[in-house]
Image (cartoon, rainbow, N blue to C red; front, side, top):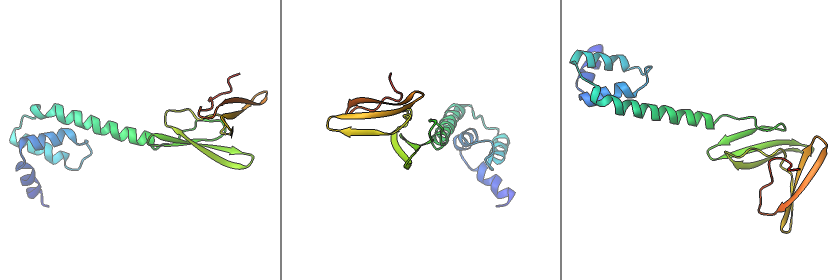
Length: 150
């Protein structure tokens, strides 16, 4: 498009649209300069549209920030790492038989180990502590404590 066609395009838009877009889009948008030039050329008062556009811009930026944060791997254990996607997190561990993993809720802290032995109505949670390996027996449906409780 030529400069005249771009100018005519923006000058033909309603004030509500051009003002909203100017305050809603980021500064690095390639059309921001053309929007501003049209606003000035036409002497538009964008005050009635600014608040909603800025609010929506902040919401969009916030959602983008959350999406980026959710997609970043996070170190959460001394024995491995975790990756988060959506509402879950996968905790990875390096053990004597190779790498293993468990899935927990995103806000849950990865357990120090993921070894559990289930038998009947009980479960044995095993922990590596500074004084050696320790175990706790809990109900089968319970979640192993993050740390050895002793």
